[in-house]
Image (cartoon, rainbow, N blue to C red; front, side, top):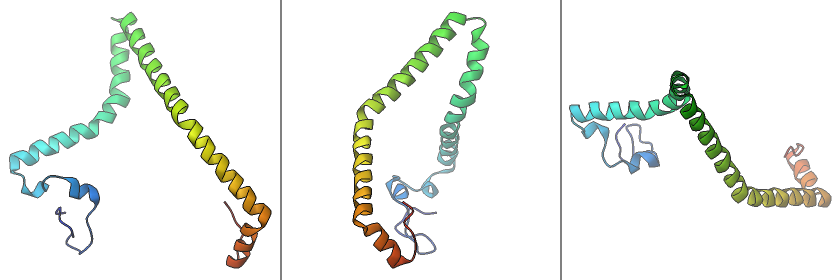
Length: 127
């Protein structure tokens, strides 16, 4: 697909396609090969993290047990700390929004506006 305002079928292109500097069709053959290798590497990073790291830790745990232990402890500590910081910063705001939504829903239930709206559309309100 070319990176223009419209594609061959006349439809609009996506925003991420417009953000690219040049189209891949304008690259030379060697640049296309390099681009393909780079995209394969970028797509393989999650595979390396999911499968490669545990295999490397299993392989290194016998000759370097203390270093492997420290690596696992530090990594899990960082993950727990970052998750806790995320919760500390964003959980209060989300709890306030949930509370406001529940109050609004209860107010609508008490006034009967939800039941009237459901009766108008011929169905019950499911949330």
